[in-house]
Image (cartoon, rainbow over all chains, first blue to last red; front, side, top):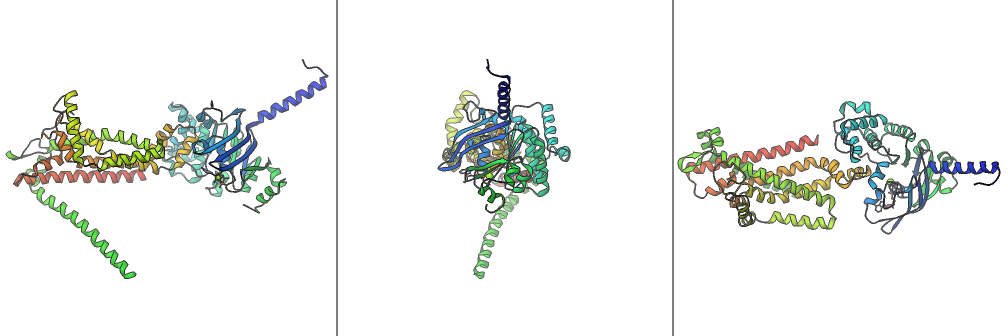
Length: 274
Length: 282
Ligand SMILES: Nc1ncnc2c1ncn2[C@@H]1O[C@H](COP(=O)(O)OP(=O)(O)OP(=O)(O)O)[C@@H](O)[C@H]1O
Ligand SMILES: [Mg+2]
């Protein structure tokens, strides 16, 4: 039994609740993560909390390890040879690098969208359906529902409803990227990783995707890598600045962009070096 | 500089034109020698006639047409699944060193003279079929198996190149969805590679239709329409090769006419390959 005044007890209770809240808010926790490609030390002692239902932006100059860090979150680095990963990545407090983890299920929970839209050379319908199919859904009606819901979610349904069985390669690049996001959504993920999703797109499509990310953040945790400072400032809630494989600074986007603590961050966001 | 370039261009043009001219001459020659008898008998009579008996002046090549079709089908049924599976394994699964070694081993198959394939078929396959399945052993089945193995290098190497040409991004995209390696192959790599696979099959088919020596050695060469996979069979090419040595007069013409039919079939296959490639590209 807890001994002490009721005030004390309230204090402790409040403390406990805030800890729990913090814990609940933290979707992914990266703990002293190190990654080597052969002899190349690419990620150096990364510590980071990624908050639920927020958009976290990873920024930094080319080659600083943004994509590599992103791929650590769904274990896409596993398919490369000669990589060594130490440290922990906790998704909902479960180490995703534990031996017992089913990588396929992990990638269902943590979906990924690439820089170049990867529309498969099959029909639009099959592109989206491929995600649930991978995870064992084969009932036609269920697939139809999922495909339609996912395409509606990304705002593509009206444009493609009458040509679902046409090749996905007939879509514009922007539409292909929307399709890829729809495909990720179709596997009902918890986290969506986007690696420079707009760099191959024109400004209109870019705006569409940014709006879409806003929408998605209501239900998903979103992590985006971007080279565009405006995009990071506009579209993210939390910003992480990386340099040479290390996190230099991270914090709420408004703070990072208005009052960066580190001069290197300031130099980078003001474009003084790339 | 400029001068020598013009010279090179002209000589290349001459070489190319003479190659085409030789080809044209061959075709003209075959048609000149073979068409009179087709005209005399009537095209329908020639290709639907079921009796081939040169001594009695009967020239129906339906048994040989069907023979070529059955033997080629047999070769595809055996060669395509094995070749495709091998190519998938080499391109998608095997470590690169293993796949290099195996691939050169398979390419070595392509260098073995067809008479050797025929010989092995003759002394191993034919007796086996006779013993375990019945019939004379010389059969559609034996020819199909031998040809199936002979078209493997074509199927494997074309399919392998096609798989290697499938962008890595497709595989990564699929793996990122949580797909296993096999799901990735089945759902994305194979569909992306389909036009190439079809081209490989048609190339293999062309090879199977044209192969002669190995088929002669194991097929039995009877001029009857084969009624079972275990029955002996004669193909169009075998027909020409077997009788050319002593054929004279009408008989000789009929063999050239067989050549015309063969030529048309192969031209059709080629056109088909092109059409498929074009349709799939759109
Ligand atoms: N497959 C790989 N094998 C070996 N080294 C790699 C591999 N992928 C990345 N690297 C190295 O890791 C480092 C970080 O690369 P990464 O792609 O994560 O950078 P990035 O920040 O995403 O750059 P960019 O902004 O250009 O996309 C680079 O030095 C790169 O050379
Ligand atoms: Mg990158």
